Length: 166
Image (tube, rainbow, N blue to C red):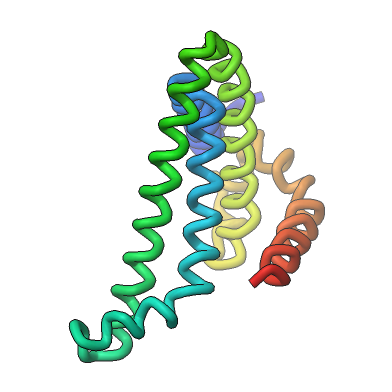
């Protein structure tokens, strides 16, 4: 099996995600992901309400909404980062640091695979690359494409689930 350049790029994404999670640990990685999801939800749910408080400071409504949304998003990410750091410190002090990092490696490996899966499924729908020789010659892309139907159905289910909460 000969690997194409895209195969090496896929492996770099998985390795980078895994190594990052090894150093950061599961708790910090999980809270980081949770913070992004919560920040998105807070931004969608409360941007209009927060923009009302900026009416005296920002005159143009689209800019006011953008500033309110960005402020909520960044504030929520910052709060999530602080909570994640505190929990990580607590886990390390308790002597579970090695276990946290080991679980973090599994989390990072899974995240790297899911990032690649999402890109391999979504990018060809936006950019016509599936007919390119480097895409067709890839040894790894066919394995990811076997999960396309499952991945799409699972993503749509999660999307419906989260939208029902908002």
